Image (cartoon, rainbow, N blue to C red):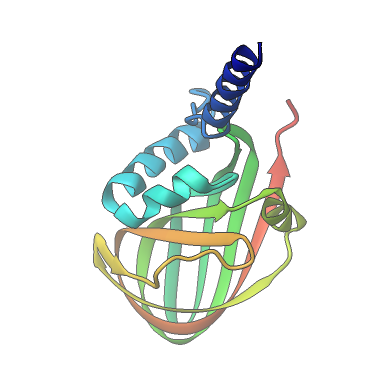
Length: 181
């Protein structure tokens, strides 16, 4: 009897772990979700170091396209989707203002990985965050810092197209809006 009980517990654990990392299926009627699904596949393919983050994250926010412009001062904007445990739960916008040694124009996709529910809740509060950034982008290639979780959050950008060099300080604001389903 104990052996069958152990097998049931193992089966339930395996089913729950598969559900926790379920693949995201976009709603075909929601354009940002369809674009986010395509961006996820491109990032997994082109940014090899992203794969473990997709496997381990509790939730992700995906911006399929963010536009950024800078000449000394800069700004960026994009709209994305928040995916919690494989299900789209809301939209999120990305606003950035920056100042520093920077010039150029680029379009990039970005994924923010949330290690746990508490980290995801930091996005939902929508507070300004201040960051330093350095990188160079030429055509479809970009060099950026190595990702690592900091306070439960890791960020991986992927250059889509552009020409930009930057060494700057920036303020970033996320505006989250939950779906009313």
